[in-house]
Length: 273
Image (cartoon, rainbow, N blue to C red; front, side, top):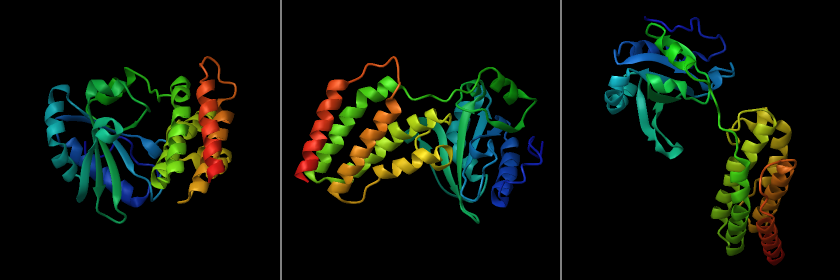
């Protein structure tokens, strides 16, 4: 099969992305160890633009998966002018190869290599671009997509400890650490809760400006410059946003004592500043 199953590709796909997809799928289809290629991400919502990356799922024969994993850098290099590639342990996904390809523009491409039977466990329903004898489609039908929702008890157990930690960094004058802490609160707590509340995928602060524009405007208050007072103000904004997002949450054990201690500590550091 020399062309993708999804053919023609949506007209909204930028030309550079289209050329890479067609060429890459044709190259992958020539490897007998590979049984299918699918795509996720912004392709699924027809929102790709020149800044989009490509999220490709490469399904392998179960018995050939180990060999493909050992060979994946060479495989990635066969798809185009590969500038750099590294594996995704930092995001908890060692099967992922994160690639940068030369071109106009330079393209970011994620290649996730998985054994065919593992396709049933996934966070989204990808579009199949090519497959052998419908096998990837059948493997996907064995399960359903489920993106993990924020565990509100997990968040509540940690949030006030994090607030205390960031406050201490502000008080000590470790502003870079404080800024990192504020970013963590946005990505791990506030963004996912806001996205879930708006019915969007709770993927941190990704695309928050589109999925929850009203909240994104409020979230600006949690952004600080390199200044202790700004950091304290931003942390106070994080606290208020978390409280508003937590209203009406049932079935969780509130850490009221931790909240009181952390916010009192923040108030004390604010007074010193």
